[in-house]
Image 1 (cartoon, rainbow, N blue to C red):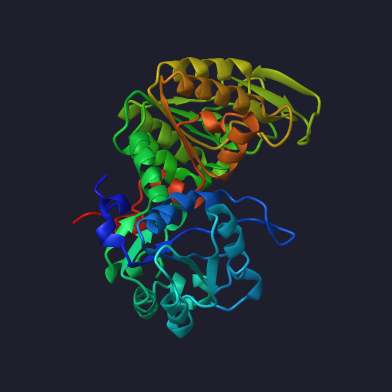
Image 2 (spheres, rainbow, N blue to C red):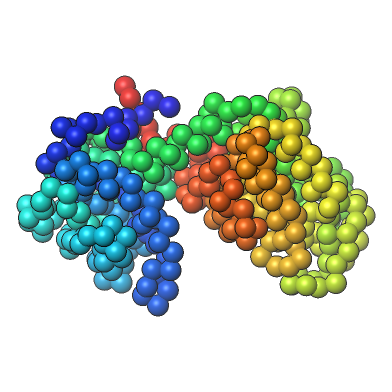
Length: 400
């Protein structure tokens, strides 16, 4: 992919330079403490590279949804000490992301220092991609690095506007994400299997329509599969279903056939009369669901068929679980399929890229997250990339 990368710069390009780095430190908190520091850790390679090359790393991030107002509970001040522990050095904090407060803090930095600026969303101009705010932030640095793929689908002042005023590059986390996504969908090795699950077809129409033109197999699971089964005339009982989208499901199926993409729906399903953990269940063929039953997972025949297809593929893209994986025993299909994909990855037989909140949770639940080629923690950006949409934060880094 033709985007500018941070490691294209030599030490002489970085020594003494003030480098603005867009990170995503919108981390979860529990009782005021960071409960998951994954996003902090993701930024470490870029920060350490800048530090080792004598640059001054000035970090920009949003936190929460303050809606353009100063909201003390959404200050990034609490993040600086935690980042400092990971880096093994003090991370200073400036109580603004522009103007004299930020400028004064930067003027006191030495080469190799790290400074975290205040929440960019304290200004309404951030989400409006305001030219004035973009210029004010850009005035703080010599170079700009975007290392926040998870925010790249938004044209904000700190992700897109700023690139108009500074030489701009992708950080290591951003580049790694883009490289893996390119392997999965941009220039993949065929045959490709896409697994798409989740509750509703309505939330993933664009995704499905894009995938049928790109992949060889499209496995549909979760509540989405019920709508597709119903569009084929199957009785899905009390299952989650979107009757208003039956025609759309048929149209997607027709387009897939035209494109040579085989859609895979459950051959057998696990059903129950109650939506709760560990109710009485039975497994039946997809056309044997009773009127008072609901489909809550794919059955063993479906998983076996999916595993067989995985074995013949070179690339897998995964977004969404195959059933109501949060509740036992309806996690079984997702866990078994994920284990098979992880096994094939470990054997070097395929590239498996996954992303989306539920997907990450499901793969962690299955204990195979470390076995996949790459797992994206970016929800909206990952989904829009899979939908074939242009991401403003990425386009801004493209080489001319």
